[in-house]
Image (spheres, rainbow, N blue to C red):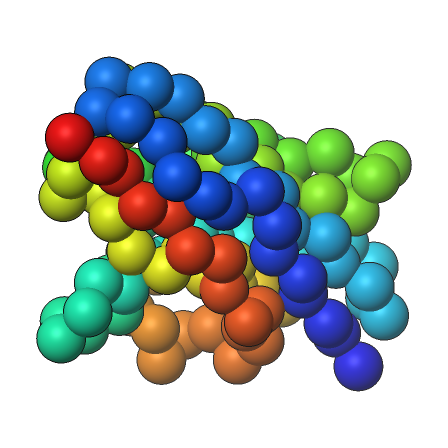
Amino acid sequence: QVQLVESGGGLVQVGGSLRVSCVASGCTFNGYSMAWFCQAPGKDREFVAGISRSNGNTYYADSVKGRFTISRDNAKNTLYLQMNNVQPEDTAVYYCAARQNNGIPTSTREYPTWGQGTQVTVSS
């Protein structure tokens, strides 16, 4: 059974940087497409970025393009999200998600496996 554990969240100032990580276990990591979602208080969980299993293609929400970078290290079974120039609206719980099919859908329904989340708070 696939398990995902996020880490690296915390408090960061506006304009600063933070990297969150997600370690996968119980699976062949390179057989999964991965994504990051975020959920702010009172809002729906929304897509942030994704990376395919096959060729490492990436896809980003418009709100984070040019600021966030998703990457994966298959040897370490780890997914990363490098967050630069963070803004107050980036404050949320960040979740990693996995799917065995290829592609990078933006709907939460397409990802059967989720981590527990890590809180990112941007202070102004």
